[in-house]
Image (cartoon, rainbow, N blue to C red; front, side):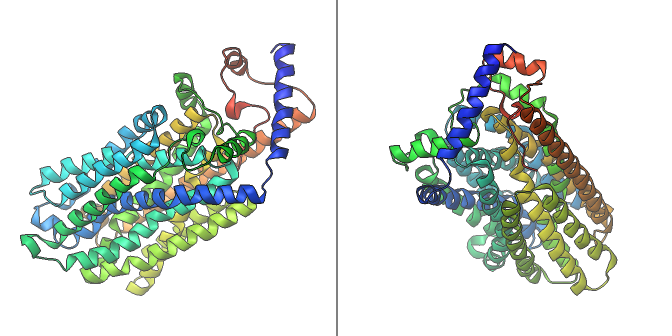
Length: 490
């Protein structure tokens, strides 16, 4: 590194400190954040609630006749579930690259419209081939929403402000489970209306709701922060100043393939992905098979629909309470590990107890731990990966690799392997959660050690960056999270 570049870097660091001093939270900032919250969180949370509802309502449809009417064997049903996640895995990274190159105001509502149509089509199928094809198409169209929204949050909120918003957003998944149980129970009573079965109406009506919301979303989903139309010019300038002082989010970074490859070469990005891989197994196997698991405790199908509501409601409360605590402590890893331990306790209760009441308690522990851990870990890359394109790819990679765990989950929870009470799959779920604990511990250890190393270097006023950083700097690329002044949230 030349003397001139070193001097410029020190000046940039000093100006960063000055910027931070000018943008400490004020009443003006709080009003600005509230305005952003009102324009982002309700509509984006609603879209994700509908997304989770439309992917998981097949579990409700199954116990009211879908498998019987389509002559689908248990392994074929699991294959249909897996095809959704195969498509999800394939199309997530490309979808976020498209989002980065275009505009969320168009891309996210369009995805919603397309999966709403696919969801309606699920209620019109007549055989297993139709179900396989539609589930794959549903995965293609839903793949871009979650990583896209996480990325949009990262260009509106400072790093420490994101986790709480992501938690509210992800709480839509748990609410979808509760909401879906109520809807499935109500819609199931439409059996025979219009010559259609109740399970067909579940797909048709819930898909129609998604289509209607998607049309409104074109007018409600925001564009990029630097050109947000719902903000005044002064508010945009204030927002961008706050973001620039905190991270790269206030900058308008042009798309560069260099940053895409940088994400693929970062071991932390892979660790975030493997962490979600461990949790995704339990998230999707639990959400998709919860009605079946509860029905297996001896309840009738209509009772099982309604009994999915309490554990999902508890999960929502657990998410919001734990993430509030996480934001106050500014810690992620220990609470993710704690959530995994709670979920493990739930699965142990399911495996070891014999009565329906005790096992239903286990369901509550499992749901609270699984959903809470996912809410915490899914906001982590958005807080720790910089710059913008690298972060967009990192978030998409996390979901992509994570959802390979979902594929494993839906294939393992099959009757000829799991038996009446899903004992073997529950044991494997514990193994996946233990794996997630190991990965979270590694991230905690590595980031705390790296922060300390960088603190020591800065305090000694020395620069000891890797040669690749010097090459990047000479080419004009941002160092992002490789900057010696960058600190990880762990």
